[in-house]
Image (cartoon, rainbow, N blue to C red):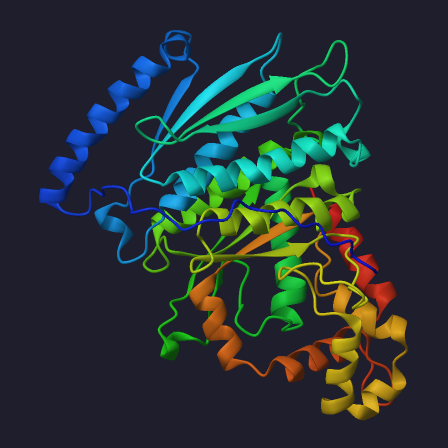
Length: 413
C-alpha cells in the first residue's frame, strides 16, 4: 500500500528554561509558593472562565518520584487532549475552555496546539470525510503565552447549521472485558504461540529475555477507547492518559507496566484514516510532549497493509515490502524465491493485524534494548516464513487460516 505522508508542522524554537519542579523539599516549597501565585494570576486574568467552571489547571511539574526523566510533557499532553475532547463534546452553543499548563514551557503548549489545529484545518477543508457530517463541531486551540503559565484557550465552532457535539462512543458498543479478551487471544496466538515477538512469552507480561540488559518484565496494560473517527480528540485523550499511567506506575515491581495495547473498535472500518492522520497526530504529539526518550507508538489494525516503499508512513509502521524482500533475499534466499510480492507483503501485514484498531505503546529504552538484542532482518524473515512460508518443510500458517483465526477472535464475547 502507498501510504500518504501526513506532515504536521510544529512551531520551531528552543525550549525555554524548565519551570520550577517539586523534586526536592527545598525546591518544592518555593515551587509550591510560585504555583499558588501563578494560579491566582491566571484566575484573575480568566475570571469569566473561572466563574463559569471553564478554567482547568494542570500541574505538570516534574515530581520526585519521576526519577531522572521528566514526564511533564506527557502530563501536559494528557490534560491537553482531555480538555480538547471535553470542549468538543460540549452540547449546545459555542463552548470554550481555558487550560493552564503549569510546569511546561510555552513551546510545548504551542506544539500541542499545532497538532490539534492541524486536525481542525483538515476537517474544515473536508479532507477527512471519515470524521462525519458537515455539521460536526470543530475545536481550535489558541495559546496565551503572556499569562503567568501557558494557557491554552479551546474554542468550539460549527461547520454548519445545527452543529452537534462530537459523539465519543464506538458503534459496536462492546464491553471493556470483551475487547481485552479479544486482544489477549491475539497476543497468545500471534506473539506467543507463533513467537512473532521474541520478548513476549504470555498475554499478561512482556519484556522477557532482556533482564541482563536491565529491562524488567512488566505488565501488558490493556485499554479500550470508545472513540470513533468523529471523536479523534477523545482517542488522543484516552491514549495519552494511558501513557501517563504507564509512566507514573513505572516499569518494575508487581504493578510495573512494560507496554500498552489500546484498542479502538470504532476505527476498525477506517484503516487509511487510522494509519495516516491518526498516527501522524500520535507521533507528532510524542514530539510536542518531548517524549521521544520515553515512548514509541506502533500501528496495528485488522485491515493492516504493508507499506510499498514509495513513501515513508512513519516510524510506527511495518517495514516496507522492498526492505522485507531484501532481508529475505539475504537471510533465506530459498524461501524468498518461493514467495510472490503479495506473499511477502502479507507476511509483513499479518504481524500487525489485530482484532481491533490498536495502538501499541512501548517504552523507548526497552525498545532500544530489544533492537540491540535481536537480529532484525533475521527475525522478520523468520516471521514471514512462519506466517506465509511455502515450499518443502517451510509451509507457514497461510493467509486463509490466519484470516479464520482473526475472525474467530473478533467474535469472542
